[in-house]
Amino acid sequence: NAGVTQTPKFQVLKTGQSMTLQCAQDMNHNSMYWYRQDPGMGLRLIYYSASEGTTDKGEVPNGYNVSRLNKREFSLRLESAAPSQTSVYFCASSEWPTSGYEQYFGPGTRLTVT
Amino acid sequence: KNEVEQSPQNLTAQEGEFITINCSYSVGISALHWLQQHPGGGIVSLFMLSSGKKKHGRLIATINIQEKHSSLHITASHPRDSAVYICAVSRGDQFYFGTGTSLTVIP
Image (cartoon, rainbow over all chains, first blue to last red):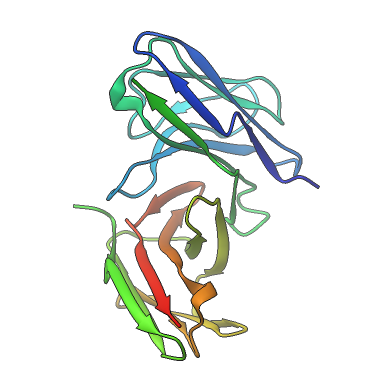
């Protein structure tokens, strides 16, 4: 099992460009998450999906959109990138409550917006 | 105010020392999690606990539900333990994260 995979691992964008971060999990989890991690701050939730076809905003959703394409895949889209979106992005999944609330993380995407 | 507070923010230790990282939280929780993140690396789950104590190798995690406090201990620390340790709490399927403790173990 690959667990949670993310692509790309690194990306540099110019202000105003768009891109989609891809995430997939092979653990048959219902819940999937997108977080951003910035220096000196804890992981912050961007969007969350409790199941296929549902998405909810997290703490910092502005400037992002998401798609829960199917149970495996949860993508994050930046429509018009801004320097404030320079960050490391993590996708995660969990199967609450059957797996006891444990969360599994992808390797991260390091995004720089110039 | 963050729901999860960790201390210290940074910690430097000599190899072999006993290390303690503390975590306090202010919300009701389903479980508390300790995560490890190596420089430039991904995040892995070390422990998930809702009561008492868990041990895995040289790592021990404890939680006091009444005091809303948890500690992560590392015995006989080693340079490979150098990483950021993150405390998180879950409430159902929602997670809240501390800002992490950066640990450096010097040979």
